Structures are given as C-alpha cells and as structure tokens.
Image (cartoon, rainbow, N blue to C red; front, side, top):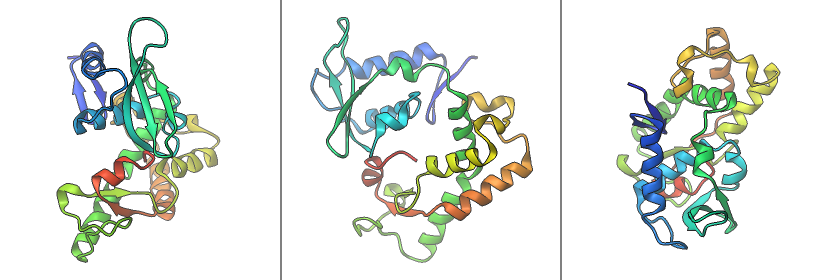
Length: 216
C-alpha cells in the first residue's frame, strides 16, 4: 500500500497526511497558538520538510499559531521563532516531494543515529542526567540529545557535502525517498560517520528545551 511519512508518522497516502494537517489548521481559531503538544511536534516535523526550512526555522521554533487568510478564504500556519519574529509557511509546500538534499540529510541522520543513543547511555551510566542548559534533573521520558553546544547537524552535514563537491556526490540506495535509505558507497558512509564524530558536540536538554532549539 502507498505510504507517506512525516517524521516517524506513516500515513496510507499523502491525502491522509494532508487531511491530518488540515484538521489541526481548522481546529484552532485564527490568531491562537497551537497548544497541543502532539500537534506541535507534528508541525515541527512538517516544517522540516519545507524546501526553505532553515529560513523558516531561523534561530528556533517557540510556537506555532494560526495565521489569518492571505489569499483566499483559508487560514494558514505561522511560526513564532525563539527571537519573537513570526513567519508564515505553506503546509502544502511541505508535502511536495523531498529535494535530493532533504533525502540525503535524512539518510545522513539515519547513518549516525546510534551515536546519540550511545551518548545518552554514557550520561545515564555516569549518573549525569541533568539538562546542560537549565540544570534540571532529567528522566528517560523527558530527555533529548541535542547539538546545541556546537555546530548543528545541518551545518555538519553541509560541511561534508561541500567537501565532496555538493549533495549530488552522495549516491543513495533507492529506498531513500522515505528517508530510510543508505549510502551506496560504504567507505563514504564511514567517512561521513568519522566527520560527524569529530564535529558533533552533544548535550542533554529537557524535551521542552529541545523543542525550542533550531532543528538538528
């Protein structure tokens, strides 16, 4: 059966995903903040799929709001960034086919995801499960491994791609459309892993602190 994904969420079709987003959009009054945490998390993953996601996210997402109609009768989504600046985005643009850069970024993240798990386990074993931002005591259900103390994941990935001459230099297996592919060249995959390991500076945050950081 055809499937469409937003973050870790799978939908039978793109139409089903679109209807889920529309239900959120029309479930809040114009001008209100999206205050349901699951809706907020879904919109964060949706925004990551926008072709100009980095520009829309800016310094980080504080909240989402419902913007009044700009063209036509329908409202839209507005990002309220952590510096207080607002910017609107089209959810329909987010649902367009992923660019090759977005596909590669998804695969890069999958190739190194174990490093974040290993970091968390090392902190738990050391008994240092506290937020590196606020000092708050953490539990396993309220902990996020973040790049907030160094370059973001996107910055590290872009450095690597540029060192090869661009994103097209990284060939992916055919399953990359859903972000579940792999590097075809496994030696290149190891080079990416080593580059990421040398540049990534992890830290721990609460889930809420992490939500308000730039996406990585």
